[in-house]
Image (cartoon, rainbow, N blue to C red; front, side, top):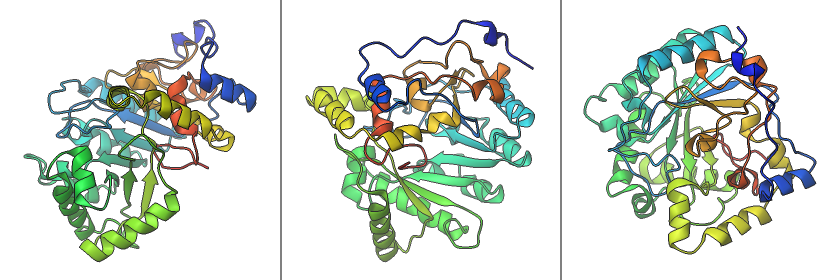
Length: 335
């Protein structure tokens, strides 16, 4: 059913004076438009058992925002009506803390969708989550897990004391259930974020390094490692401003602009859903409260993959983070 939002005015052009828009225009890529919708990324809330320094969601134990049962069912209904949306990517906060996480994940698997859980690993040991790893394995849910580094001091400096030790225990638990092991059908991916105001290293090289070190030190195996550029928003932007690095970081991103990465940004095939059901071009726009263009459906109740696949993507200078170097997406480098 078409949304009444389709009757609203056309999307406004990119903001004047935008450095990102200038780079995209020179590359012949403006306006940036969606080409398809194959992934529904759902942020089920901002509550988390950690409060990481780089978190673009500003998530933490004291946050109370979370998706309710009705909105979660709307997400499942959207998937039911649009089989071309083949992947449900569930994020947070710690998404598993949402009381409707398991209904959403299992329901999407029941519809034959590929489901990704953005897991911080330490959540596997929180009270009430003792059977979480078994649930993920039983439902064939892909785990994409944050691990800032394969050494404890760097991980704990970004995520809090004791996080590394629990993360290693979480990876070992997942391995024991078959995750990351050939032929198991249980994918385990790791995510690397830089700990400072610089771009991530070459994804292939750092993946080889992680694979070697985690195997030799802890006997841990995994499928892939994704490098993700820290976006200059929320906590990371505050860190950059406090340390006097914001301008330099933005210059670094702009100087590393890559047209190939820009042509393959994830927002061209993904729609992000906020905990209240509002639709965004990506999780970063969601945190900046920049919903999809006004001529597209703007709430999950009105979700229409065909209309959203023709939308103009709303952009800003933070988008430079996705187009620098090899590019950055929720699936790692794109160029």
